[in-house]
Image (cartoon, rainbow over all chains, first blue to last red; front, side, top):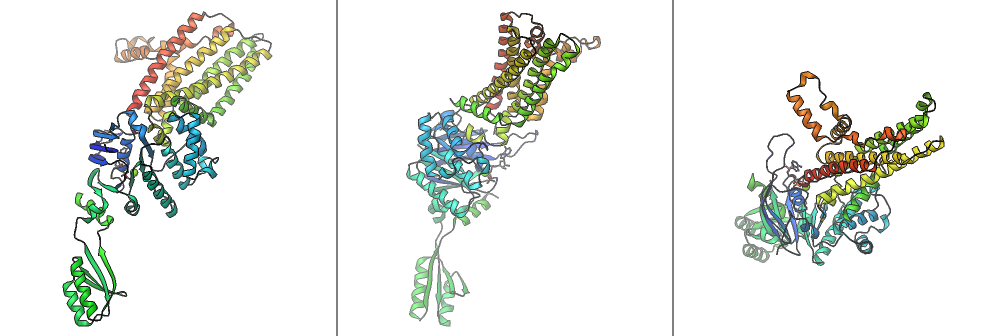
Length: 308
Length: 253
Ligand SMILES: Nc1ncnc2c1ncn2[C@@H]1O[C@H](COP(=O)(O)OP(=O)(O)OP(=O)(O)O)[C@@H](O)[C@H]1O
Ligand SMILES: [Mg+2]
């Protein structure tokens, strides 16, 4: 069973004027396996938040179906297993983190004893102890995000749905969120998070889905998505005699000169190897040998172009 | 449990609202200032104090119900605090019920405080309060419960300003329902008459909750009447809360 699956999911918001809006989500079908980290990518306005809100019961889809651990999101108990971190989470400003977590614990139906245990666990994990009695009103963005993550963990949900969990955080903050996500995966949870920061996604995701204008253009493991094309290899060589250089330039797909040396790109490893062998026997030396992979960014940009 | 958590928090938030204290201040001023009016009619001061004070309890209670009530749900959506609440395994109606209960608790305390001030004042003037006085307070509170239900409905479908206008109009018209059917002759047979007649039957007759004159004059009111008025109010209140839950059920937040 998939942790999350959607089938031809669509959403067209009602406008306040009687003007028809274009669909914000248009036939989205995706599946997130259990115990994986799934990165949900898309540009601003692609429909990431809309999808997440449907999964969490905040917004009703206008067509299709969505399931969390096999239960339709139209049913209220589908939400029992969801921990949700909204984009820029907002909490009651006059409560302290301790009171906030207590409130959500009660909403989750936890008794006083369980709530105390929950606080101990979650406050430790998110380092909330030293700000436990400060009002949320005085919180910085990073502190709010940490509290948001803590709230999402209340009730030990199996599926974490995080809407841009790293946006607006400094490098250390992003790193601690990344570590937390991986830690949650170790605890056998499923993590579905949206982002448009490709670096974060590339580092921690098992699989990704790319959303463009309300449609999913690709879905799969990052290495599969990127590895579908031939791998080019770039070599950097120095000390080449003129004749050898012109010979290699003729074989290479492209060539340029930098301070490091001559950069030559070959269509595959074998061609590159032969070139390096020739260069070495003729008195040249090898500075770098780099298989060129398409980056997730290249793939992302290509996905955008495919649609438009 | 979940409903109570929401209710408690609603209460906690409402008591932080400055509007509440401004209104309570004016209510207390009106109650304590009522003697000035009673003074004109010598020998009648206790009666006038009771009359004006009960009116103050009603009016200021309604103003609190309107100002706080019409923003209850709206504010949660506007400030996005609702996101992390609705995503729990909780039905939407439970959220509405919790918000309503918190407000009902707040109004119970506000009404009790105003009644206490009035009672103390009346006693200090050498007067006394009887059962009818407390029956009058009870019905005022029951009316506030109805008004709050309407305010909660409005807060889940429209903005606080529009909501407040509608609830206030309903309060005014509800206290003078007969003007809807006692029309001048040239309205007879027109659409206006038809619409107003419909409104007459839809809008609750709020003067059913008004036994303030009896309370001021010490005239006994049958407990059966009080019970009937409470049942009458409860029917409207429950209908309004059901409507609020239905309106909120499919709302995108
Ligand atoms: N409540 C709403 N009413 C009308 N249109 C909406 C509403 N919410 C979102 N939209 C529209 O739906 C589309 C998708 O928005 P959504 O917020 O899902 O994008 P997103 O991928 O989360 O973007 P971002 O990266 O900026 O957060 C946008 O065109 C947006 O204008
Ligand atoms: Mg978004």
